[in-house]
Image (cartoon, rainbow, N blue to C red; front, side, top):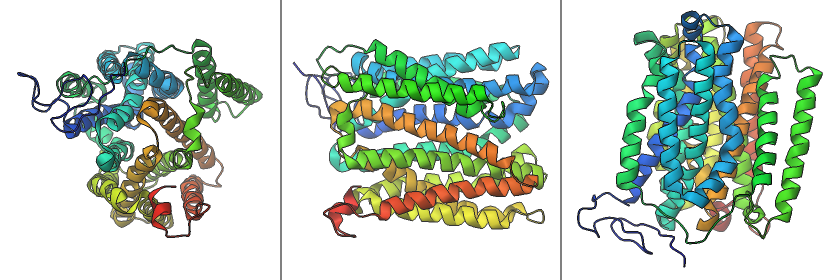
Length: 486
């Protein structure tokens, strides 16, 4: 007997009780907006940890007497585990319940954050960061699946828009918050700050988030888990470490073997489509999901490829401190935070395609202006307007991406869709970081390298806009049906 529920305010369907239907149950239990706030807070915490620690690297090196290679694994270890396990943890959410996995991931992430802050040496810090990545991987794909199950279709676009905007705001605000924390209370508080947030998320999860499950028994595809995990780990490692090892034959061999394992994984999945695969191929029959998930990878690469060169330009070329560089970048996440909820609501009304296209053009325009203004005689304030345009673009991009990707996905495939979606986004970010690092070493001077790196996101966004401008077969450009879905 199926027991999947969808909550709407204080009413429910199925057998899970929400709202105020049971005496003593908190009034906000099952309320869609309370659920969204809880999930978004946990999601923000894990994404912020991808970028906030970068600005603490010099302080960590001095404090722990560590080399750069050791401390860089503080960043890489987290990203590696997160990227490799998203698909598997999405499937585990279907098996054990998304709320259960979300709570377990939050608890693990919080405990690991405490261990990071207390680390006495680089080895301990790296190990704790790996555990943090595991916690993030467990909770991340559950967020989108729970939102799809909780919100009715008419309000799902706005909800996914707010949720999706968290990714952009977390990515862009990392340098600002990191610089502020490191400059005031020290690098350890970059991790300690997660503890009260994680505990709050845990409390709210059990008070507000309903336990939505199907009554069917599920089995985990262990060969698929091993193949996908090994392939994603190898590929992510090659992309992250390629520049450090000068793209030697070993790195290229690892990348090739990882791609071969990925092909074996897809072949294995093709044979299991009738037996609960990790990736149901039915997802890709929805053109909107396929196109938007691909664009999410490209935009993830573009966001990373824009933030890193700008941060380095402010610190290396203009001589700003970490905190002042972070504050100089603050207009972008602030504008994005303000715009994102409205962009999600607008996507519900006119379709996400137009909103997304406007976001791509705004971000590309702002970044192009920043590139032209990035010269030795520049002042940080001259970048304010370009950064605001980039923030406007981020708010208009991320919100409809998630909305349109999940618009046609049935609820029973939401967990798998979330795993694929987040994996592609994560791999896009890793690829963007690798390409940015490589381009910054190619230029004839450090400034020329920064310019080359900043040009890459502009090209990616232009290609993405071109994809959106190609009309769907059978629909005329501007047709509302086309606009509502890619």
